Image 1 (tube, one colour):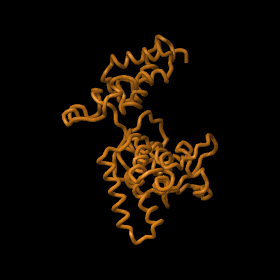
Image 2 (cartoon, one colour):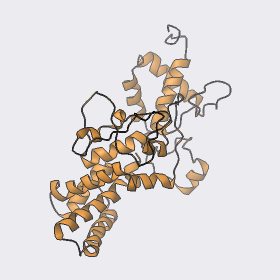
Image 3 (cartoon, helix red, strand yellow):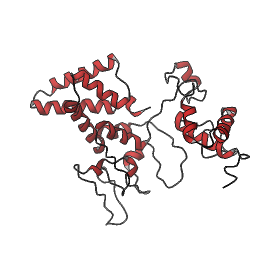
Image 4 (cartoon, helix red, strand yellow):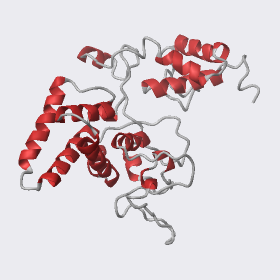
Length: 292
């Protein structure tokens, strides 16, 4: 234990700052987080790795908060994530640090983001794990008495943060697995992200997300003030962290108008509820909502 934190041992600091870098940029200075040995990949910027390790060890005195502050305030991290075709072809994995990172939310955060924006998230700290909604047929445990007991919609535990979702190694929570969460059978220092149609199917149709669409729609309809564009603007800011541009706002307002016309056979109150839910569904499925 003394050797791990010894000033004469650079390995611990190198491994840790490399993992912080991967969390911020999506790929480590040494891409193989789990292997710093001869069989792993070599660092793309060895001098930078050494500098950060020494700063973390000697100047920041192992303070993770201070090290993260230095990284996120750097010019490299604060660059725009916009990319040209030439740069994308030369540096598809952002190894040159020539643009800011643009990463998809982690599996657990995708659900947590939807719960937070919709206003459903339940925040009490601690307590036993909970069983959010899952598709029929997924839960097939070895023992008959092992039931997946999803709380009633009136029970706030149904909407607890992803941290409290019940996990079973042999039966992972479906939406987490779809968004590349590991099964927890092994230690995984890094996750390999994918981009598949199943992910869109989850955020569009999974019961947990449909409930978020409905809740955000109700918020826009009854909680937010102002005109239709004002309400959409507020919801877009909640979902993506920024106000929509004129073109996007115009498209969303136009969608609202078209839906009001297409669903004219429904009673007024029911029609408005359905329309706002669909607008909320679009907002929660924007690429900007699922990435940071």
